[in-house]
Image (tube, rainbow, N blue to C red; front, side, top):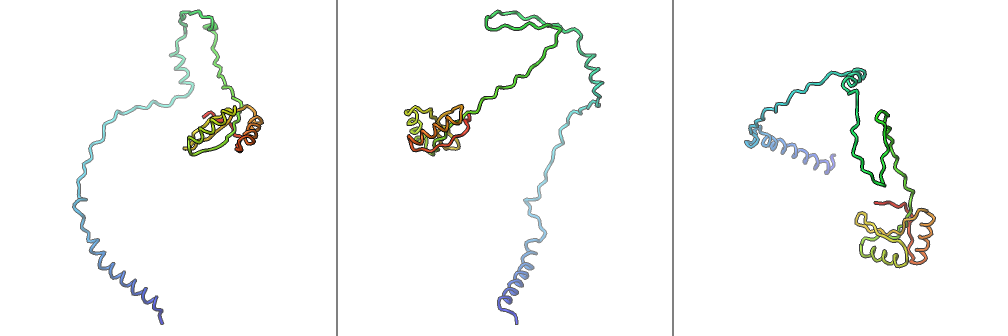
Length: 184
């Protein structure tokens, strides 16, 4: 004997197949809506100038062509000399090759700062900065992602920043973090 739930499911599936057999031919009758029958005219493509590509040359051929084109005598035009006590230009021999020396940027030593607090309100950060400045700490505030961070420093030695953090904790009860100082 078949369960009642299974019977109801079979009857439901049969009704779905029957309704699909009746409704689908009405929907998919093959007629195209008139708003889709549009004629689209595409213009001619623009005329571009034909570019001729030169054949590949070897390095020796290029070097020999440049040597033929290069002028043999190069003369430097003397500039009017303005004498100033601060600037003196070294004299270069026109025949001596000039060496280009790349100056490496000087690396700035790491600096450390103490992050005291982070606030959502600018007024709270400003009050804390004023309070720390009155206590002779170099305090400042930085805005990042709508948060206001209060810092003290920067110092060249991490140990100095740690000592400042400990002093602020004793004096104000604020526990800070020693972090690397970032200019931006």
